[in-house]
Length: 253
Ligand SMILES: [Zn+2]
Ligand SMILES: [Zn+2]
Image (cartoon, rainbow, N blue to C red; front, side):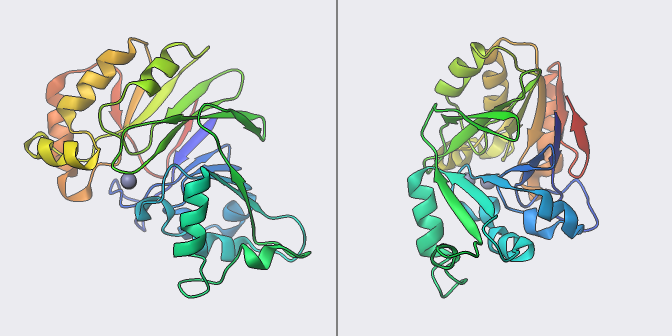
């Protein structure tokens, strides 16, 4: 399985402002920076976009991406999210003001997008990948995704603070190779992390201990202004198998 956190700065740097993962170049988890990919053909290969929640860093370039890859005809991108998120996207973004109503424009022969509702803990199979949505603990309802190709599995918990159901689910998953877990704030902002449903290094360490599985922990979602401070605090924890994500690098599992 190939996984890349798409860069959100050009040229690609370690700074992460937006969230989009590409899996095997065909499936995306979130669309924060998807529409910024400089190689348009790579955008065109993405056929399924799974949304974890409606926050802007996760959907920012969805309208641009759908515009970029549109081709007249019945084939179109599939957008997968819980019904509420599909509804928010429709009413607040594709509402005929912020952006054309791509949902209303997709009822005839030519389609921009097709929405598919997801249900918690009901796996869907796309492009040979089984994707299981698992709820996490953020300030709005948010899904993490477990993506399994039958040989390896990778978890994308998205934005979350301390949570339980995800780790219970991952503990019994048939395989698990890596977890792309967030750390948004440094420890001095632990209260803010709690209020907003995010991690600081101290709570990250507790989540690692909850899983009790030997996996690669790849840290994502460091707020850019705290990125170095978070890196130092993580380093000081001395945890095994913890690394900082490199945006724009293809991870092979
Ligand atoms: Zn969020
Ligand atoms: Zn976020």
